[in-house]
Image (cartoon, rainbow, N blue to C red):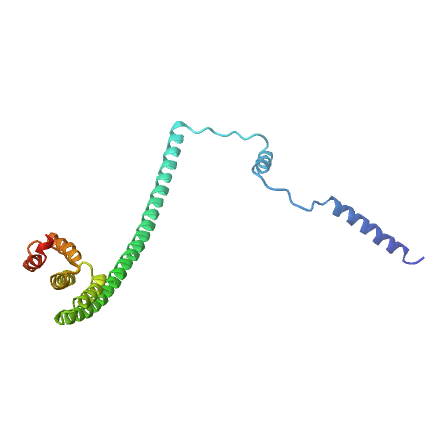
Length: 203
Protein backbone atom coordinates (compact mmCIF):
# COMPACT_ATOMS: atom_id res chain seq x y z
CA UNK A 1 0.00 0.00 0.00
CA UNK A 2 1.19 3.50 -0.75
CA UNK A 3 2.33 5.48 2.33
CA UNK A 4 3.24 2.40 4.42
CA UNK A 5 6.91 3.24 4.38
CA UNK A 6 6.44 6.81 5.67
CA UNK A 7 4.11 5.67 8.49
CA UNK A 8 6.57 2.98 9.55
CA UNK A 9 9.33 5.56 9.53
CA UNK A 10 7.33 7.85 11.83
CA UNK A 11 6.67 5.02 14.30
CA UNK A 12 10.36 4.09 14.35
CA UNK A 13 11.36 7.73 14.91
CA UNK A 14 8.92 8.10 17.85
CA UNK A 15 10.25 4.91 19.48
CA UNK A 16 13.81 6.10 19.22
CA UNK A 17 12.89 9.51 20.68
CA UNK A 18 11.14 7.84 23.65
CA UNK A 19 14.23 5.76 24.39
CA UNK A 20 16.38 8.88 24.37
CA UNK A 21 13.99 10.66 26.78
CA UNK A 22 14.12 7.74 29.24
CA UNK A 23 17.90 7.79 29.32
CA UNK A 24 18.02 11.57 29.92
CA UNK A 25 18.16 12.60 33.60
CA UNK A 26 15.38 14.93 34.80
CA UNK A 27 17.55 16.68 37.39
CA UNK A 28 21.06 17.95 37.08
CA UNK A 29 23.54 16.42 39.55
CA UNK A 30 24.27 18.71 42.53
CA UNK A 31 27.60 20.46 42.33
CA UNK A 32 29.24 19.77 45.69
CA UNK A 33 32.77 20.55 46.81
CA UNK A 34 33.80 16.90 46.43
CA UNK A 35 32.30 16.56 42.94
CA UNK A 36 34.03 19.75 41.81
CA UNK A 37 37.28 18.53 43.33
CA UNK A 38 37.03 15.20 41.50
CA UNK A 39 36.26 16.98 38.21
CA UNK A 40 39.25 19.30 38.72
CA UNK A 41 41.60 16.44 39.55
CA UNK A 42 40.35 14.48 36.55
CA UNK A 43 40.94 17.43 34.25
CA UNK A 44 44.39 17.99 35.78
CA UNK A 45 45.31 14.42 34.95
CA UNK A 46 45.84 12.99 38.44
CA UNK A 47 46.25 13.99 42.08
CA UNK A 48 46.96 17.62 43.01
CA UNK A 49 49.87 18.33 45.28
CA UNK A 50 48.88 20.99 47.84
CA UNK A 51 51.73 23.09 49.20
CA UNK A 52 51.93 23.35 52.99
CA UNK A 53 52.04 26.86 54.41
CA UNK A 54 55.18 27.87 56.25
CA UNK A 55 55.16 29.01 59.90
CA UNK A 56 55.65 32.58 58.77
CA UNK A 57 52.66 32.36 56.43
CA UNK A 58 50.52 30.72 59.13
CA UNK A 59 51.51 33.45 61.57
CA UNK A 60 50.62 36.14 59.03
CA UNK A 61 47.26 34.48 58.41
CA UNK A 62 46.64 34.25 62.16
CA UNK A 63 47.51 37.94 62.65
CA UNK A 64 45.20 38.90 59.79
CA UNK A 65 42.33 36.88 61.31
CA UNK A 66 42.90 38.49 64.74
CA UNK A 67 42.93 41.97 63.18
CA UNK A 68 39.71 41.27 61.33
CA UNK A 69 38.10 40.02 64.55
CA UNK A 70 39.23 43.15 66.37
CA UNK A 71 37.73 45.31 63.64
CA UNK A 72 34.48 43.40 63.93
CA UNK A 73 34.46 43.80 67.73
CA UNK A 74 35.22 47.52 67.46
CA UNK A 75 32.35 47.92 65.01
CA UNK A 76 30.10 45.96 67.36
CA UNK A 77 31.10 48.12 70.36
CA UNK A 78 30.53 51.33 68.41
CA UNK A 79 27.08 50.18 67.30
CA UNK A 80 26.28 49.01 70.83
CA UNK A 81 27.38 52.31 72.38
CA UNK A 82 25.40 54.25 69.81
CA UNK A 83 22.24 52.24 70.44
CA UNK A 84 22.77 52.43 74.22
CA UNK A 85 23.19 56.20 74.00
CA UNK A 86 20.04 56.58 71.92
CA UNK A 87 18.01 54.37 74.27
CA UNK A 88 19.44 56.19 77.31
CA UNK A 89 18.64 59.59 75.81
CA UNK A 90 15.07 58.57 74.96
CA UNK A 91 14.58 57.01 78.42
CA UNK A 92 16.02 60.10 80.16
CA UNK A 93 13.74 62.43 78.19
CA UNK A 94 10.76 60.23 78.95
CA UNK A 95 11.55 60.25 82.68
CA UNK A 96 12.13 64.02 82.67
CA UNK A 97 8.84 64.60 80.88
CA UNK A 98 7.06 62.38 83.41
CA UNK A 99 8.65 64.27 86.33
CA UNK A 100 7.77 67.65 84.82
CA UNK A 101 4.19 66.53 84.20
CA UNK A 102 3.94 65.20 87.76
CA UNK A 103 5.32 68.43 89.25
CA UNK A 104 2.92 70.47 87.15
CA UNK A 105 -0.02 68.33 88.30
CA UNK A 106 1.12 68.68 91.93
CA UNK A 107 1.36 72.46 91.59
CA UNK A 108 -2.13 72.64 90.11
CA UNK A 109 -3.47 70.42 92.89
CA UNK A 110 -1.70 72.50 95.57
CA UNK A 111 -3.08 75.73 94.12
CA UNK A 112 -6.57 74.24 94.18
CA UNK A 113 -6.15 73.08 97.80
CA UNK A 114 -4.83 76.49 98.87
CA UNK A 115 -7.76 78.23 97.22
CA UNK A 116 -10.26 75.91 98.91
CA UNK A 117 -8.53 76.16 102.29
CA UNK A 118 -8.65 79.98 102.16
CA UNK A 119 -12.40 79.75 101.69
CA UNK A 120 -12.76 77.48 104.74
CA UNK A 121 -10.43 79.70 106.81
CA UNK A 122 -12.48 82.79 105.99
CA UNK A 123 -15.63 80.94 107.06
CA UNK A 124 -13.89 79.80 110.24
CA UNK A 125 -12.76 83.38 111.00
CA UNK A 126 -16.35 84.52 110.53
CA UNK A 127 -17.66 82.00 113.07
CA UNK A 128 -14.80 82.76 115.46
CA UNK A 129 -15.82 86.44 115.55
CA UNK A 130 -19.37 85.30 116.25
CA UNK A 131 -17.95 83.26 119.16
CA UNK A 132 -19.39 80.12 117.56
CA UNK A 133 -16.41 77.92 118.43
CA UNK A 134 -17.93 74.68 117.19
CA UNK A 135 -18.65 76.06 113.70
CA UNK A 136 -15.24 77.72 113.55
CA UNK A 137 -13.52 74.42 114.43
CA UNK A 138 -15.61 72.64 111.80
CA UNK A 139 -14.45 75.02 109.03
CA UNK A 140 -10.82 75.01 110.19
CA UNK A 141 -10.81 71.22 110.18
CA UNK A 142 -11.97 71.24 106.58
CA UNK A 143 -8.99 73.46 105.72
CA UNK A 144 -6.74 71.17 107.80
CA UNK A 145 -7.79 68.13 105.71
CA UNK A 146 -6.56 69.93 102.60
CA UNK A 147 -3.34 71.37 104.08
CA UNK A 148 -2.41 69.36 107.19
CA UNK A 149 1.17 70.76 107.30
CA UNK A 150 0.28 74.44 106.84
CA UNK A 151 1.15 76.49 109.95
CA UNK A 152 -1.63 79.06 109.46
CA UNK A 153 -4.31 76.35 109.28
CA UNK A 154 -2.91 74.53 112.32
CA UNK A 155 -2.66 77.73 114.36
CA UNK A 156 -6.25 78.77 113.62
CA UNK A 157 -7.53 75.31 114.51
CA UNK A 158 -5.64 75.12 117.82
CA UNK A 159 -6.70 78.70 118.64
CA UNK A 160 -10.36 77.72 118.15
CA UNK A 161 -9.82 74.62 120.34
CA UNK A 162 -8.27 76.75 123.10
CA UNK A 163 -11.05 79.38 123.01
CA UNK A 164 -13.73 76.67 123.16
CA UNK A 165 -11.90 75.00 126.04
CA UNK A 166 -11.67 78.32 127.90
CA UNK A 167 -15.32 79.27 127.33
CA UNK A 168 -17.18 75.95 127.06
CA UNK A 169 -14.70 73.47 128.60
CA UNK A 170 -14.84 71.37 125.42
CA UNK A 171 -12.05 70.04 123.16
CA UNK A 172 -9.39 70.81 125.78
CA UNK A 173 -7.44 67.58 125.18
CA UNK A 174 -7.58 68.00 121.41
CA UNK A 175 -6.32 71.56 121.79
CA UNK A 176 -3.45 70.49 124.08
CA UNK A 177 -2.39 67.65 121.77
CA UNK A 178 -2.26 69.88 118.69
CA UNK A 179 -0.61 72.73 120.62
CA UNK A 180 2.16 70.46 121.92
CA UNK A 181 2.81 69.31 118.34
CA UNK A 182 3.09 72.89 117.08
CA UNK A 183 5.32 74.00 119.97
CA UNK A 184 7.72 71.11 119.18
CA UNK A 185 7.84 72.19 115.54
CA UNK A 186 7.91 75.96 116.19
CA UNK A 187 9.25 76.49 119.73
CA UNK A 188 9.95 80.22 119.22
CA UNK A 189 6.48 81.26 118.12
CA UNK A 190 5.17 83.66 120.83
CA UNK A 191 1.51 83.21 119.82
CA UNK A 192 1.77 79.50 120.67
CA UNK A 193 3.07 80.29 124.15
CA UNK A 194 0.12 82.63 124.62
CA UNK A 195 -2.27 79.81 123.72
CA UNK A 196 -0.49 77.61 126.24
CA UNK A 197 -1.57 80.08 128.93
CA UNK A 198 -5.20 79.46 127.98
CA UNK A 199 -4.69 75.72 128.56
CA UNK A 200 -2.49 76.02 131.66
CA UNK A 201 -4.88 73.96 133.77
CA UNK A 202 -4.44 71.12 131.26
CA UNK A 203 -0.68 71.21 131.87
